[in-house]
Amino acid sequence: MGFPITLTGIAAGLHALALLPADGPTEAEVRAAAQSHGLALGYLSERSELPPIRQGIIIGYGRPADHAYPTALDALTATFATCFA
Image (cartoon, rainbow, N blue to C red; front, top):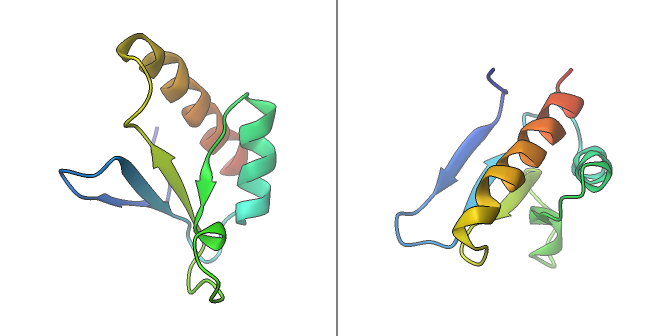
């Protein structure tokens, strides 16, 4: 299953950035879906005092224990499936 997002990040980073397509769901819609799946995400609009040029999701992966990743990835996949259905 693919989603029309652009995923970026750096090898040494502690997060990935999922840029939302201009004609796709808003950060607010993704936030609502993520919360319904028990997932907390960061958002580009929260990271700057300037108006966002693009909407996106900040996906942290530096803190969870290894055993937490499958559940978190399932919740993220469910969130995107809800938003891009």
